[in-house]
Length: 374
Image (tube, rainbow, N blue to C red; front, side):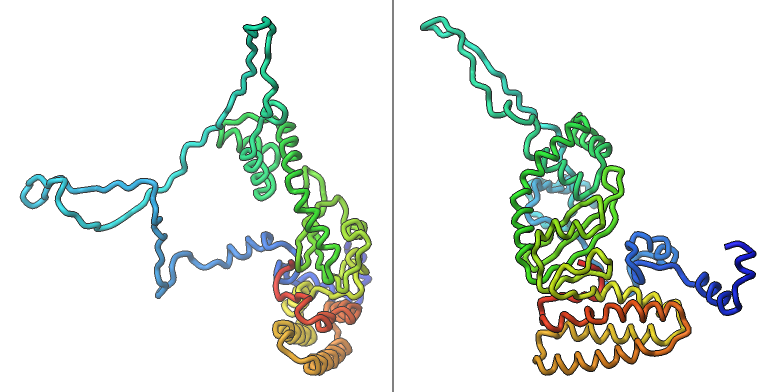
């Protein structure tokens, strides 16, 4: 915004602009930003390391079945210089362990097809093609290591290629690695199909998505969760079409997610993720002197406390507590405020009002978490 635009602003608009610029940045506690973005702030506020006064020390547990035991006996008495016989009774004074990894080298099995001349008829007889020559030259353990490093450790093809070369002395092209991972993918197909099938029968489904880079392109990592299955799915889009394809027409009784439009309308009822709202409220409490965000935070605390014991309460008790929560929320949302952040928060929660306490209709079946997403 240039000088001329600033000069046209009213006094109240200038005040609002200055207050907005003074607001602290959002963190993973007050938004959906990943915890990794908080590292610098945590590092600056970190206390010195080391054990605190009064902390009870802990030592690593010794292995009960070591691969090798070496007994170190004294050979000479330091007092008189006499030799100490190796067959004297001894007691263990202390024990320490040295742990290392064995040298790892590829195990290469070479299969040779041989041909012989039949002594009866003189024909040349060639051995049949062995099973090992009918498929990939890479064995199941190499497949397992490559899948682990590529998926759980998120190595790129270039870094995976380097890791296999540096650790095991294996030379594989990136194209070969891609084919290897595609072959391994087939081993998970039955498990994935079973998980997706369970998801499409579930009465309660929770879903979320986040941006992710896949082979240099912007994509999305979707997670679908039910009591019986968790399905991870990568897609190039964040649109509702991903949900439609995953659920294949199934509409659960309750769909649990944030307020993102693409996540709406997939269940008979919708439960808004209160963990997402709690972060928005925490940010408003942090940056605003208005009492409304604090009242909302206390209201959410009551909801979370009720969720923790929802299965222990009678239906009449739950109904009474729900009415009390509804009355409190009406008062909070109708409270006047001059803070634009508070008004936006009131409007956001007001739009989701009929989705906040759906979990009370399904005691113990719809998880409402204080922290994190599923």
